[in-house]
Length: 263
Image (tube, rainbow, N blue to C red):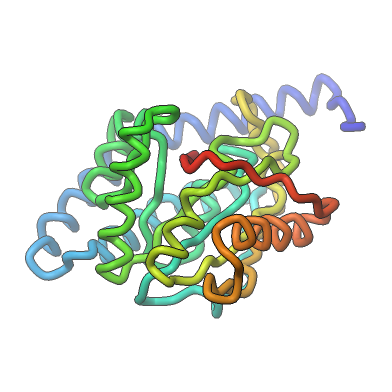
């Protein structure tokens, strides 16, 4: 059972949260101006927008560094390609996952719910990066999303999915949807499972109060070759089992047939 913090601790957490949200609100316009400059300067020669993605990664990492009580460690970067198609799949327990996964420091394209693209500054930057929007529950949007991801894979850019489709309320791994794995099989590119530890405690779903001491860990697991599996179902379950094992959860087959997946 989670320990309920005392009044002094709760006050300190609220102060830390206020500082973090204020910092984000004050600096997003400044970072967005920088993103506009990077986008304009690199547009003629950087078709994959790799430079802009790394700028966006630095933008996100700034908020992790600015909170000295947060620590992020990344293990297994050698499994991530610098160039070439791949489908990255990660568990999703918190909004903090987004900041933490930018610490991968490799080029890739996010698949994200369409609402995020409407956010001031952050959403505009997502458009400039050519990240992939998805309207959840909309079949036409799913088809468009898969086509958009296919273009990125053919161009040599990995794509990153949260295959649970949404954040987990209790931190436990939810069933995976099929979209990421269909792309892997169709294009013959590897699935790279990623286990994200410690972020659910940092900012639980529907929560706004940030924990002051966070030890987040990103574990990049060995790639899965789709040719080694008997179709989408087997590939999906193998990826889920790898992530579940890395998270220390019981391994159970829990796949579903829906293809959509987003944060």
